[in-house]
Length: 383
Ligand SMILES: *Cc1c(COP(=O)(O)O)cnc(C)c1O
Image (tube, rainbow, N blue to C red):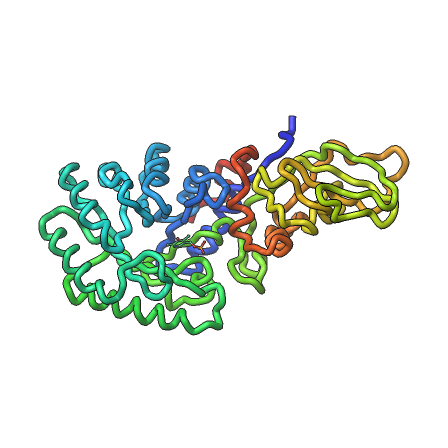
């Protein structure tokens, strides 16, 4: 039986996107970013597909996510960059999880390395302008100095230097130049102090496509490996990417209604003419944005708008007229979004309707919706 509701994830699309990015950034390496359960696609299957397609590294926000990847048997280099004093640094060191370090973490990590009698692997992070994690420029010198001392004691190895960009999705903005300049200075300072790293990394997906001068030794590719465009004015297809996620459900009810039929809570929509309404069993409880009214849904070959307020478990689509006598779309597939080249609505249209970005639409699809994987085995050769 077809599942009533499902997220279909095409792992061949993920592999295609990783290969595409690897080709663009070569000879730089690719870190596939699989935080937030692989942007909602499923962390482990995405990580495995990305590695099959030539990604060399995996990146996550939290150590707990990295440990889940290790438990799944994944041995690739793995970086986690968002910690709190409650983070299990000892487990990270034990499991060879590389740790991003902005400052305060260093002492915790060194304590974990002493406990594990094993050197930690760290990537020092400089804040070049994003204002989130990363050492302030004024503290960089001393952070590098402390890390080198611990390295000399055999307690850690400085494997990488990195930073994160704030506006690379708006390529005309000049702040990226300033961030790049500050990163170069921070790298030069560390290298002059005697740091000898494996990887310097700065680029996210938008910088992969728009700023070759940010690629360094490694790029951190998130949204692009899922086949989505980080740019407001460019589609996946224009970037040579294939969206991997399709969200769909079977129509739960189909009925003819007269003109003037009110629809859903608040009665914010009334049919203008006699019409047919299709009820789709997905709502904000499943991560479909409540603000997505007006977004497209594909049913039985046609594309129709969501009308009225999106509810917790369900939403209504107006098919815009009467179906031929005796016909119904009950049980038909209703596709909210998928790969546009198959005729499915794009994630970008849902993001526009909901006033958000494509990242949020895919990431928020709840785990209550079953993930079904297509092409689990590679169909093309890994280069
Ligand atoms: C999420 C994240 C990325 C990936 O960003 P995309 O725009 O999705 O490619 C890269 N680096 C860091 C530090 C991140 O938090």
